[in-house]
Image (tube, rainbow, N blue to C red; front, side, top):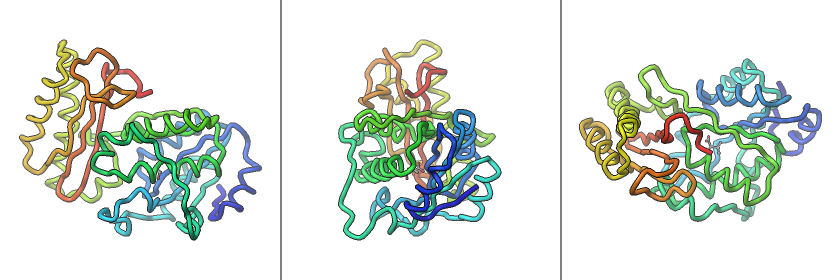
Length: 283
Ligand code: PAF
């Protein structure tokens, strides 16, 4: 496995890779969820590229970029064990050189859900992912369904800018009690960690209600909210049942829908989602 820190060095090494190239962008501090994305890329591609870059532009000034967990040596060992061929690990100055002034904004889609409380977040994500696509030139890119809105934003970006990239959305990997894997789970206190499982339970409740024939989005949202409210350590930010393409809230579930939520558990913000009908992919 080769590692490149600069764009120039990366391009030299990239030229030797067998095609097609599958790409997994990450912010590091890898867990089994990330590794499942690498595995997915491995299965679909002749070569696998990963990037590790804690992207400053997707953090708001109020969010603690410096505190984001990092462990580069461990990450590289995990990627090597998973069969990655080339890893791009730029510093912020390499990605955002002095005077940087070029941004990618996916507009409408990013006003909702995560975008409503993190208004600059997706501009940062779209910009860095767009730039990584230009540098890495992958044929396949793998993102996790856990960040469903992010995957939809990247889908929009690929279509709108005409990247010749197949977007693969891999299923959410969960802890044994159902909590979606996230680097942020490490911030949770033991009692918060237990309380956080109510988030998955509320998604399963939505799935059960849907299976029983309930099609009122309002009814399902309010039953989920009730369940989440029963857990005092969890403070919901939103509970949404939306059209999976536009993310507009639904009244009736008469098409494929994204059931998603965000909640604060102590100081930690967690997200999770499912697609209805069960078994349908996000895209
Ligand atoms: O999902 C993430 O880890 C990040 O948002 C990404 C896609 C690597 C862009 O910085």
